[in-house]
Length: 254
Image (cartoon, rainbow, N blue to C red; front, side, top):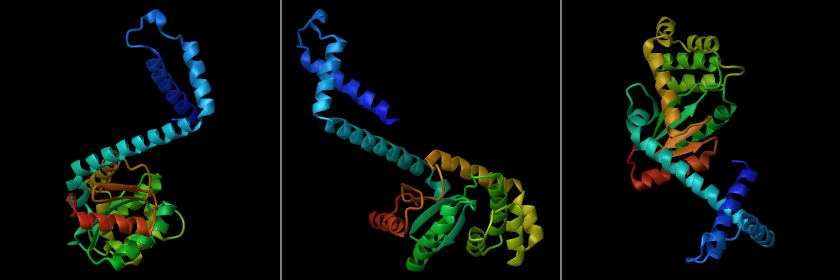
């Protein structure tokens, strides 16, 4: 909502409140102040007390954020099996870890590349962290091609090594470039080429897209820890704190 729209909405709501305060309980319709009079009262009040608009907008923002977060938590809880324990998910870190971090990423996302260092540092520091790598190639058709190869590679092991190599590779991540990296790393290329276009791989991508939409992912990187959705490259400390809070509370979803 634009600032002017918010201002008008708050002003109108305030006007209604003023009108209610001005009208005695027993007043008749003809006794009610007209709109022009109410608007003049509101205008004079707001000019003398402009902080009212600021406070109202801040409260409106706070409520909207709280409502969004509540919807996200509910959606995550409803889909926890798919997010944390689905049959086709790609797991890294400690597979038996007590807290799971789910990352939605795109190989052509520069923020994902920079944020990868935070995840590596978390895994080095936390031997009980389990990671689910959620391929979400939303930026371009090239990203989709790279993700298909990545999913195919995951079926042969050493996924995190390949993931890091492709994520930090120079230039655009494409299907062709992903295949080159896989071949250089010694994967069975006949199997990779077969798996990348299989119905199972396409089903993984479709499911990931639906999950992202359902829980409110709007860009990459995005993380799920417990029932919390963290959008953007927020840094090591934010992720570490979310993991610690989830571990302390006892992970009820993952």
